[in-house]
View 1 (cartoon, rainbow, N blue to C red):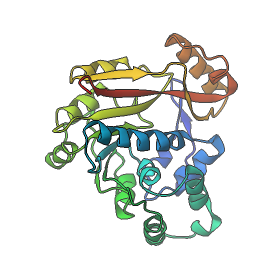
View 2 (tube, rainbow, N blue to C red):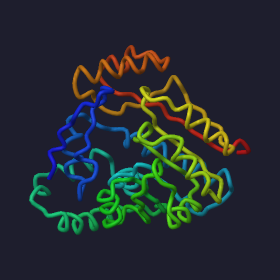
View 3 (cartoon, rainbow, N blue to C red):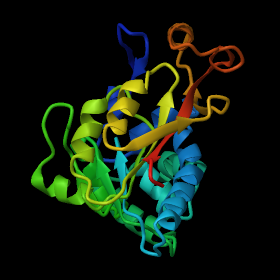
View 4 (tube, one colour):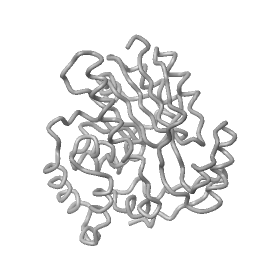
Length: 276
């Protein structure tokens, strides 16, 4: 199993490339636990509410299909559709009893673990991530109804993904803006066949206006509460904190009491059709 040892890019943000595409999520949770990575926890309540609001806006009782971008091991799907907390997922995957299991054995354990916690109001979730092993795990244990390991920054969506996106009424993302750009969103919105809402948690170090402008071209209006932020994780070291504070200031935000206190912060951007 990869150690998940981070490396610092020339841009200053720590990368954890070794943990994002493992056969199972154990390295991911072991590496991020000390950094208190928590943005999926915030997404749980927001996305459940967004799904309900999206259904109510169009007067339907049918479940809203969710397309989760940069879905990784299906963590957002787990928190959306199962009676689980992020803390419980950390506990599950860092449990010493899970360490000696093979990936195949862990998959069998996880099938039962998730099946026993599935909510009666569970909704279809489609996962998209370039990490093929991660999405395969999420599909194998039943977290995702469909999963696609495609990189829309480089190539257009394949025919199966295009058909799947056509059913999606809510697009979610808790991490990845900056790795994915307006190119991905434009490719997805071109496939839309029903009104689509986009809910994105975005680090304050990353500009979102290019994505918002692209969504606007498809009739979506983006709003955010600049006074409300959501913590993502602790900084890995002082160098990363200095980088983040500099980028936040360059973006026109005030880091005092937020990034200066030791954590990355995100803002929630909500994009919905202007006619809603």
